[in-house]
Structures are given as C-alpha cells and as structure tokens.
Image (cartoon, rainbow, N blue to C red):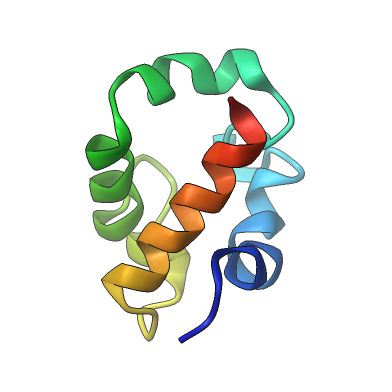
Length: 80
C-alpha cells in the first residue's frame, strides 16, 4: 500500500495544488472549511466515489479505499 503523502503527490496534487477543474487548493483553508465541517466520513465518501469534476478515487481506480482514506487524512493535516 502507498501512503497518503505519496498518493497526494502523484495523483491528487495535480488538481489540488493548482485548483484545476474547480478543485479546492490544498493551501486554501477557507475553501476547505465547509468540507472539513462535514466530517471525515463525508470527505472519504467524496474521495472514493467522486464529486463534481473529481472522478472516483481521483481517477486512480487501482487505489484501495484504505489508501484513499489515508490520503484524505494527509490532506486534512494540511487544510486544518
């Protein structure tokens, strides 16, 4: 299994570093406030199933749900 930081840097960062496709930038705490307020389980569900312009698992269908959850946990350390 890959760790959250590795997955973020190889998959998620493409959009969440630049804001591509409307993705909230990882350094924009204001953009994440409402999302964080929904709770971790809601964020897991969005990341696993996709939301808006983000495909399920960020387009990396080979990742496990546990790997996606680890990545969400990593992102939460950056946005809180």
